[in-house]
Image (cartoon, rainbow, N blue to C red):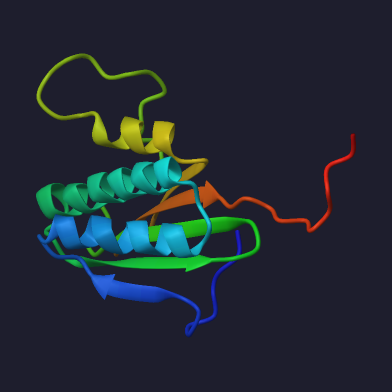
Length: 139
């Protein structure tokens, strides 16, 4: 997966202002040309990722967002490093308090990846951008 140049990505520290976070993601999705529902789905997925950092990883971390030719990408990094790449269930979790966040992220986004180091964990959420070819469709 490509990484943005430092000046191509917007980033901000994780905070408890989830409404502002969702609005920032929606704005970037709109600017990237995503359909409204895709922007809403991405905002919800990012909200879930940040909530996990707040609830399970000490609350410290960063959100970074950027576009390339194919995707709008959001990385949510924590500074605890507890989230493992195999943590996301393949099937819907049983009914109970919590446990749906990772599964929801996987279902809502075109790509969902968890990476882990000793010092941090990262959730990468990606939505495919619509391609504009400039050609009329063939009859």
